[in-house]
Structure formats: structure tokens, C-alpha cells
Length: 379
Length: 239
Image (tube, rainbow over all chains, first blue to last red; front, side, top):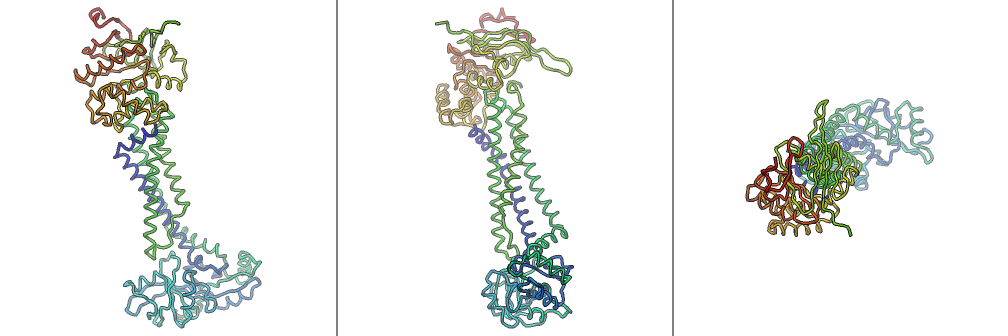
């Protein structure tokens, strides 16, 4: 009877396509908004995740996340280096400034200063080229986002002269940084260059990046640094998590996306439940006739469930496909990079969609299952 | 060898009551009715007299409040719900007043439903349904949808659906109510032919007196009681 059920469904094209559109749209809404939300949360962690070598980040105790800096004294670096269990400790500058191209284009950027010798802090993508390029005096390595803002005509920025705080710099290399929550493009310089061209202030050391000696855990070392310096020391994972928590606790993003995702669920429930209920109601006499003829309740349940699951499958497939397409297309926009369709989102959306169609179908068909087949003889 | 049974369906002392508020309304009073193989029995009477309720009970789609119903020697009241559904599927053919064809299935697929419900494959069922539809003169309309067929043709598809699984009992509820005289006669000729089968009984509920001539026996009901019966030629003597 499944073949009969599917023909019944597909023959009613308005409801068939209505159901598919409704489920597809709500799948798109749920999965796309969840992906963007998770992507935005990840952006909060990305400044930390992009520095793979550092197991511990040390900072001013008031710093909540990587893009909200509060410099610490330079002596902190030497104190940390002297702590037992430290393999190495390097300075890391992270601040906001303006980069101007020679032809007057400018962009607010996050300027990162990495240790002059080790270059720890450069992103892993294209690292060898970036490392070679950054060693020159006032050399800047820019990410794709900076390039597209300063040189929108597509011209190769390498070798171009630019300006930061009235200091002449030159674009020496290109890299690809993970997108961050601030949304600002990122440029990299040597630490000493970065602090020399930014406005003077007493302290400029944003973070100290630390690696433990073999056999020392990052957690234990972080505790030891905190105890001995009074500074805040977090493991890479803890600080990345702090970036995510900062977004959750200090922005309206969870509420906003939560509403969008809930809207997707509501749209799915309303469209699926109402359309299925309408479909059943319009076919009530036919279902009555089928029951009189000898179609069992189990067969009717199977028929309605197969109808619901077919539209669920097609609608979900189209919706999740549209989400994947949008995210892939978004990758060509540097500021939208780092948004992924995680398998957990794919599976979670499938679970919600199929729960909704199953429950909606079951609620709708209950009327048929309880129906007296003799109804078909009544006027 | 014993004689072949002559009674396809038998109802004895059928009582039917429906709740109405705190009270119960009795709509059938001690109905006794036999349907014989090879005969068309018409159940006639004014609207609301209980004809359709009798048909529903005899076809096993409604359980009576009291009394015994036997179809092909099997007591319907003693069957489980599942057995009753299976029994209906295999032994009873239904023809409804408004045909109840599924709009999105072709004539052939509609006629094949009882076989598909009983587990036959779509191909096997539609092949058999096509053969029955051809016998009923719908050879050129097998793949048409109900909306592409006239009322008479739709009723013939419904008749094919009732015949396709070769049931012992066919029940028809006002089969000509939605048809003009010519189409009604044509449909009744087909039912008459189907009813002449010695292994089949046909019960027709109707108040269309234009088709009484097709009946082998007419049973008249009034106010939930059988008030008379006889051959069509005896109509004057049936109250």
C-alpha cells in the first residue's frame, strides 16, 4: 500500500509541493542559522585556535577574551620565563589600528605582533612564506580580508607600500587567518615593529604565549604561573572557551539566533501539521472506504507515515542542500569564512525534522485509525 | 457430498442502538434477513429507515448492539478486529454511493486496491484489475484518472473494485444515486450479471425505484423494521 500512498500524496501537487517547500524552508532556517551561530561562537575562539604552538596564554586578570586586550608590563615575560616547567615564553601583541594603502584606501585592522625570533603567533596557513616575508623591517603580512578591503581591484598587494599610524610599512606577504568575532581583517608584524608603530603607552605586551616542558601539563603550568605572577593564565582550550563564553554572555546573538532557529521549528510544525491534517481531512472518506474494503489500521498508519517521511526526506534534502550551498558560496567572502555545516547540525536538524513529520503524521492519522469504517456509508 | 450452501449472509434478531445524550435510540428492531447466493436482494425504504445500518452490519463494518450475523457461515461477532478486517478484504466487495475512488490513482489502480491491500504486488493486482475493467467495457480507460471519467464510468470502476477479488458478498449503497437513468441501468446490468454468479450474493440498498426491475427480491424497511418482502412483480403487495 506504500505505492498507493505515495501516488495519493504526489497526485495532490499543491499539498505535496507545499509540504516540501515548508519542510525545506524550515530545514534551511534551522541548519543555516545553527551553522552561522556555531560559526560565530567559533569565531570567538579563533584568535586562540590560530596560534597552535601556545599551550598557555598569560594575560591581565581583567582580560575576558583575546580581542579585548589590557597590556601587561614587559617584565612579566621574564618572570614567566623563569618559572619552573616553562619550555619557552614569547611576547604577543594584539591591538586595533588603521592600515592605509598608498592610494588612500584604509581599513581598521587587528594588528598582531609575533615574536621576532620564533614567529610564534603566525597562522599555520602559508606559514613558511609568511615567516620568510615578515622578517624585513616594518614588513606586514596581511590576510585575505585585508587584501580585499585595501585592494578591491584585485591587484597583487605584495611589495605595496602602506601606512600604519603615519609609519611606512610594506606588504611583504599574504596569509589566511581564521575569521574572528570582531570581524576585522588581520595584519601581522614582528613584535618589535608592531609595538614601535602603535601609539605610545606604558605597557604594550598583550599576552605571553607559553609552552610547558615535556612532562608538565598545561593546566598545572597555568596554575603555577597564576600563583607566582598574579596574572591570569589559561590553557589554550580554556581561553578559546572563554572567547565563546564571552559571546554567549555579552551579546544578544544566542537570543537572536535562538529565535531564528525556533522560528524554523515552528514553521516546520505549523506547515507540516496543518498540511498533513488537511490532507487527511480531505481524504477522510477515502480512508473510510479503504478501511471498509479491508485495509488495516497498520496499513493506513504505514501509508500516512510513508507519505510524511517522503516529504520529510525530500524537503530535508533540499533544505540541507541549500544550507550547504549557501555556506560554500559564503567561503568566497573572506569575512564569512569559517562557517561550516557540521555533521552534528546535519544530524540534529534531521532528528528535529523527522520527529516533527512523524508526530504530525501520527496526530493527523489518529482520527482515521479511530474512525468507524461505516462512516463511508453515511451522507 | 452435502448440498452447497444457499445462504451467503444471514442476520438474526439484529438490534442496533445509538447513544443520544443520556438515552439510547434503537434504530433497528429484531431484523432477520437472509441473502441467497446467485440473487440480487434490494433493501428499500424511506430515508432514515435503517437500510444503510443493516448494510453496514451485514458487511462487518458496524457491530450490532444485539443479534447474530453470519457471512459464509462465519459469525462476524466472534471474530477479532484483525480477523474481521481480513475477512472483509477477502470476502466482501463494496460499492459506495459516491464511488470513493482515489482521485490520484488511475482506474486500474483504483480497481486493484483490494488485491494490493491483501498483499498482491502492484503489477499483479493491476493486471487482474485491468482484466475486470475490460470485461466491464473500460478497456480504453484503464489509465485514466477518476476526473477524466463520466459518473457511469466511475461507477463501473467502483464495480470492478468490488469484483476484482471475487468476493462472495457484494454490498452496494445507493449505487445509482449519482447516475442518470441510462448510466444507472448500465451499472445495474453489470451488477445483475455479477449477482447471477452462484457463488455470490448481492445486497443493494436503494430508494431508486427505476432499478427495482433488476432485483430478484425486494425487502422493504420502515422505522428500523422489515415490513415486507417479495419479488419486484409483487411490489403492490409489499407495504
